[in-house]
Amino acid sequence: MVFDYKKEYKEFYMPKNKPAIVTIPKMNYIAVRGKGNPNDEGGEYQRSIELLYGIAYTIKMSYKSSRKIKGFFEYIVPPLEGFWWQNGSDGMDYGHKENFKFISIIRLPDFVTKEDLEWAIEEATKKKKKDFSTVDFLTYEEGDCVQCMHLGSYDNEPETIHQMEEYANANGYEIDITDTRYHHEIYLSDPRKCDVGKLKTVIRHPVKRKQKILEKK
Image 1 (cartoon, helix red, strand yellow):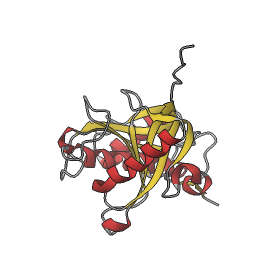
Image 2 (image 1 turned 60 degrees about the horizontal axis):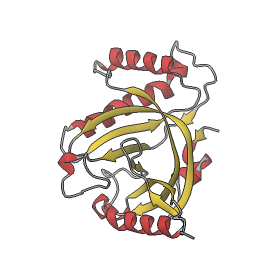
Image 3 (image 1 turned 135 degrees about the vertical axis):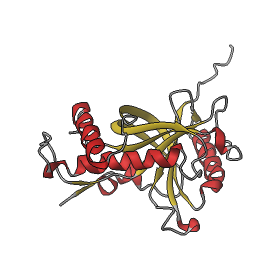
């Protein structure tokens, strides 16, 4: 059977629509960095998605090429994900999407190396006549996070985020968004083909244990 990351790792990709604490291990991704409103037609975000999928499918279909990747097995390309932030803010201001910065990512199977990615970039550039030089190999370990399935419009995410923050606080954690720990979204629906009210998006925020305040004796 073809390996499906969503089915094999349901705790990461198919959470319930109630917040939960989860520990995310180190993973490898293909990544494209950019900025700006993700809804801008032809903007950096939309271009980043084209680049990611171009490379993702080049690697997926590598077994039909002269490139024989060690340890390769057939798999379904994992869902599109994104790290998001705004400079000077520890949250997301949905009223000013033009200030968004992002790293668009797609998870890589563990057998894919940096050298394999370099091959895929060269192969895709040659075949698709497009510049893929902004695609990077990213290794990232999120660690402890609170996550929840968000149903509906992206603009309504603050409601789900509020529930996540309350849950984290009630369970001894606090949100830990920093310059290196981000607001994270995993897109399980294609907004071009899905009714807005039925969109499924995993939202994940990094957390850390609250520091206990020692009472003075």
